[in-house]
Length: 172
Image (cartoon, rainbow, N blue to C red):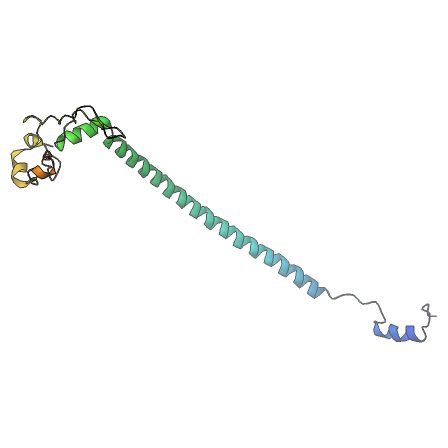
């Protein structure tokens, strides 16, 4: 005795398209799929971990470079600050033969002159940059000659000779 009802007509033709008995799905493809998914996930994690480690090493190198460049910038800024200090500028100007300027005169927009200009006081022989230099430096360094003032140009004052190098003192 068969408990299944007998199908007729169209239902019988459709029933032939489906398998007759209960079948179990094959386990091998499912197991392979699971193994491939797990293996792919592990390989993906390994690649991701390697990329993160490489990025960490690069970041560490860049931080070291940044620190060294910051230290160099600070050292250069200290040098600039020491060279631009007023006393250092005054000392260097004296070494180059510069003197403080005289009284200035100002021009108004209408062309009138306010004040009486005066020339800068010349250096005394003791303050001259040539007096600070040792004798061996005088023989090797020849200062540039300045031309005499041109009378047609208003009789400008000649500039003080500028030494080629900074003066040196013996024993330093």
